[in-house]
Length: 126
Image (cartoon, rainbow, N blue to C red; front, side):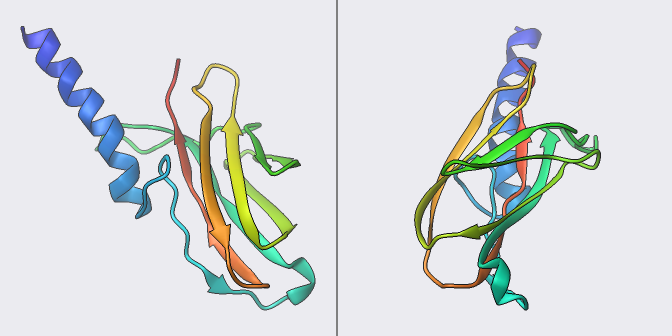
């Protein structure tokens, strides 16, 4: 019984933490929608990819995670940071994957010609 309660509690935390810590739904992403200073970069999506952690643990970066948006792909650095520029406005799908972790996919809509969307992702270990 105790193991089942712990499992249910951890499952609930795993589902709620991304919503609380990132300020949004869609798999634990947040979108700041700030205006950018360099219009040559067009729309930008940037953020961090980390391991989902139960507080008080600090989420660990996932270096080498693959991040793609509608065919544009990059790899997260040693801090888990990624940035993809020149994304056309309209609907886009963000997919984040790494070996040993569950893949996360989210969709958003860009409305402006030059905005920055910060989307942090917290992947679950398999």
